Amino acid sequence: AHLAKLGYFSKPKVDHVIIPEPLNKDRICLGHRGVWWAEIETKGEIAHGSMPFLGDNAVRHMGAVVQAFEDELFPALDGKVTRMPVVPEGARRSTMNINS
Image (cartoon, rainbow, N blue to C red; front, side, top):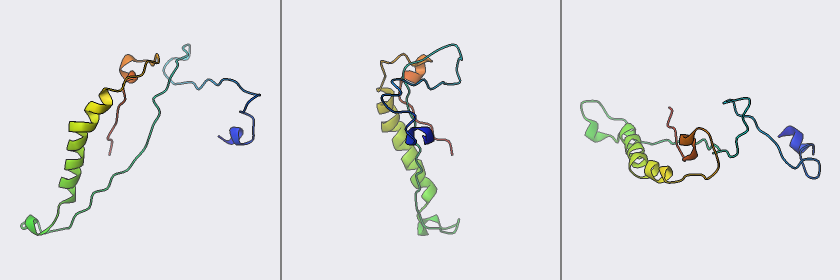
């Protein structure tokens, strides 16, 4: 990004770039799925463990978010497939990773 801002990577100096992936140093692959990072926060209200009905459990709200991902988002993403020769084959589909 720094070199691009300085003008080293702009037309007419550069027509193509190769961005290596760490999967195989002798292979050039076309296509990239990209990445988007997001953070989701659910809110609630604390209640005593013996009277949870007096509160609003944020963890259960997050469970509902994850369930919506399972029911709606993951199937929709699985239907998106690139025609680019992305390797491995499974990486041609859109995916989402919930990691923390």
